[in-house]
Length: 296
Image (cartoon, rainbow, N blue to C red; front, side, top):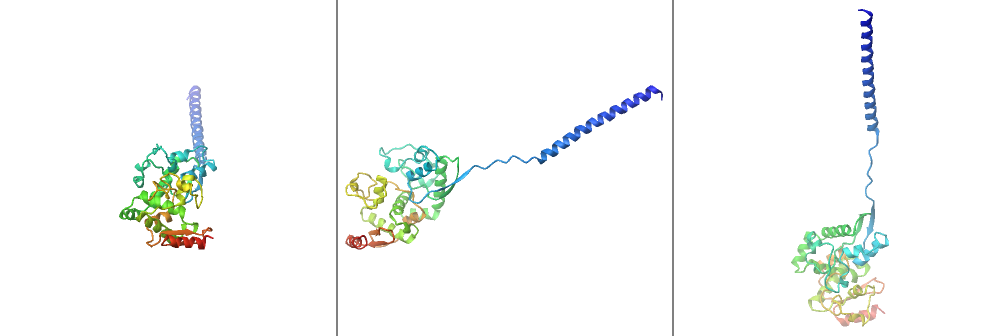
């Protein structure tokens, strides 16, 4: 092999070594990059912020709306509007709702179209997304109502010859008329339910001051003679039978009491001023004696 051939051989060898080094370098960079990428923590997506809402038994749509306003959930009447306003404000007997929820919840079929969702927004403690809209909250509450009103309860309502709307309307009155401790005492609530159903059977007015409070938006246990004359179908002193719709959103005890009333001969009841006791009466004369004795 002459000198020139030796030079050529060395040049080829150097080129091979250079190419090998270059390939090795690229492979090293690729492997190192892949390794580093495997060590990078994946991006964590934070779950939506949640908040707790405690919505009480006996609250009206207006109360719920005010609750969310006080917590800066929104500034306007978004919830109030989405739920269809308060029933008693429906003076034109016509309202337009943002949505017909009866297509999703069959228990609303009995509810007259011109009435709001008053009575069906089940009171409970809810976990809500901070970004929840009024409509999303309403759906959550209606879904809860749908679960609480069991198939057995629905069958018993149908067997009684009443509608779900009538039962919820009665339950709302029981919820507001029963003293605080009776709201956790199912037997007391059932007796009060039986008294109201007894009155309906004989065509006697329910004479519920709670229904007047719904009209006047107050919490008076007793209303004046002038207030008793207000011309509203929610005035159960002036009009007999149930009002057109619920006067509040009742809890489960009141709903069950409306479905399963205790059978008694009572037509009257009164609650002591401190709400510590209830006294029942079969006649008006006996009721007056209880008033004189226990409300002095």
